[in-house]
Length: 316
Ligand SMILES: C[S@@+](CC[C@H](N)C(=O)[O-])C[C@H]1O[C@@H](n2cnc3c(N)ncnc32)[C@H](O)[C@@H]1O
Image (cartoon, rainbow, N blue to C red; front, top):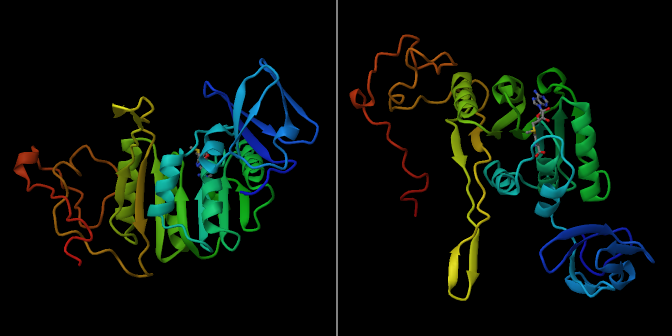
């Protein structure tokens, strides 16, 4: 991202009075033709962003450099992208820091890649894996368009993560794919003690499978699952009300920390939720859950599955 006067070759987004947007690359002498007449690029070059330019036909356009979340949702895409609200949560809960060694799979269209690269900075390293060449090509174009050059710490590898993974120690790993549970052993081998695994999944069935696989693995802390909803608000005069742009379900985040080699997570004292590993359950089982656990007929037969106390309760 740049600040300061607008320069040749920079992308600028122009928004008209109806909220319609158009992105242009600034070139000296160039003209953007609209249904309301031409807009001269020279009217913007050398000046600040946040200005209004007028077409020959009198339409006004507000000009800004596009910022990261606008680029992420408007760039060309082949696969579903991680939306900005979830990318923001991933950066926080996976604790992505400048200089971190991060793995990401799959890359899809590269939306999350852009957010991760910005967070690790030029001194970090991001290994991105994508099994489809066409998707990787789109992601490469999107990422380099946004950054404006090749990121020095970015490596994009085409192939199935488990087959081609080639990383040394990792501080953080983000899995955004259909079957993240298939990659937990490979990623777990490389995550440093205390490292964080973050899985982004769209459905409850994926969420359950990846959580149970982590418990069965034994080398991770009890996974923590969240969903983020954002509500827009309209605030104008006395009309203060929820807006219409509230986003619906996108996905779940599940995070867990890697234990040191040879350590196994202490088993939870509380019993599994009633029916959690009942007769119909066929997935992975934590070591404290016997294969024949399945007698519970009703949640009332069991002790309640208490929610754990908030982590920082009473810590002052
Ligand atoms: C939902 S998209 C990822 C979107 C991406 N995070 C973004 O923000 O644009 C899931 C991607 O994972 C890829 N994928 C699925 N399983 C994979 C695996 N085992 N190894 C590498 N890539 C995989 C798919 O080809 C697909 O492109």
